[in-house]
Length: 146
Image (cartoon, rainbow, N blue to C red; front, side, top):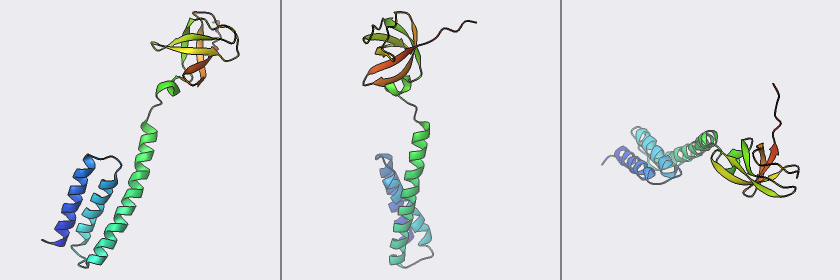
């Protein structure tokens, strides 16, 4: 079997294995092997082919890793309690002075405390300022007259 065909087969096998594993490692090997297979049509020296495979695989791995991190961080929405920062809700159980009550945001009820330690009555509209553990820290929204 020709050397270039072996490199291409190795590349295809690595690409298939990548489907079942995370991390782009086997994809890097696959791309490296396929490109080495293409170059091995012109380069007959196995030492140079292996060196070429190593360099290409390393460059592909570094660049795929960088690209995937950028794509993941740009397209990943905030989830859980992090997504609640800045949202508004309604107090369902009043928050006493320096105490804890409950706020309903988007159909879920959360434990909450007042940002300034003052009481907030049931039915008041509040905004999430931050959180501590699974407890929201909220502030009372001012009602604008128009």
